[in-house]
Image (cartoon, rainbow, N blue to C red; front, side, top):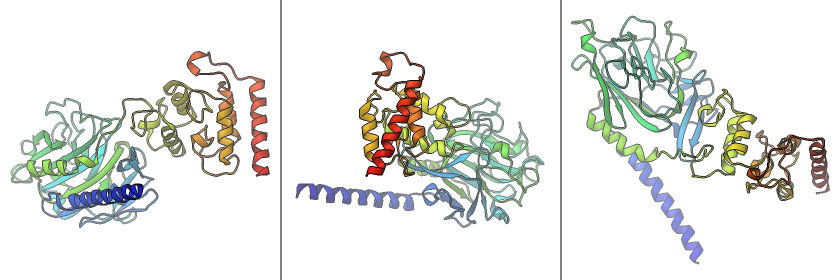
Length: 432
């Protein structure tokens, strides 16, 4: 009876939390004028062609393969690889021009993006429309980059219409990497021709476009033709996306408003949503799930990244060689966990207990999906003979804790052991 009560009470708690979350999301958001774009990572799934827009502008079609993840098992996010991934308003063949309220002479506008950038480059695009290549003041790109001239906003015209995150003296810098931020851009139009940049509800930087503008005609004049793009900008043709400035980052939400959000509204939106973007990044190398320790779940996350090596490089690419592969796995096992390949239970030993356990699971050579604890030691997602080769080649079988012994070279005896154990597994599977 007591256990039943606890389960039922827990279910009610979960329901209440979900209701509070949905109510807060629905009622607490401040809007300035028409809300053209309202994208949430939680509404997109990996492989979907379309990211549904809850705003008045069009839906977005993917370019490349942006991937939906639940970052650290907590925060829905869309991951962009910085080279081929983006979304375009409308379709790739028939993009829909950005709304008239966002283009032309001195349009008012506000952009909000929840984002996490693992490693910040000079210029990484969050949201853009207009196009690159000039004339001055004709582009609109909201960036998360380090460059002191155009790392925050690119209107085209470096040193004049472009804006960095830190100051008007081209000092490089940006909000801290590897942390969720609510980044906001606003432009006040002809009445207030100032571009303002905010991070986490606080004004970081502002620059008066009027001092550069074509007075008395206009200050900014954004190209009207191209569509809104997510994580990419349009090149000088307005037809193709500029690959060099695509964003390599995660995005949780995007909102684009026709009007200008006030400081108080921006702060309110940040405060109403920040609890859903809790930073759980561990100080422990290899702790991918952020629980403060190195465990099987981290290795299984790594295996997923190995299957899609262009995704999550900044998180899983331990040796910074541009790919997530077996070398990164060895770093995790040998250097971070200080154990051996084949240590299924991660107790610091590779011995008979590990072999008995993984073969008892019954996934050897079946093609079934397997985790580290089920024999997938090489990270290909299955328990096959290659896993045994990887484990015995590491040289730790029955050698005790790794810290206590020197790493031996693989020997003929090691590979004979691989063959013997593999044959035992096949025999056991056929017998069952």
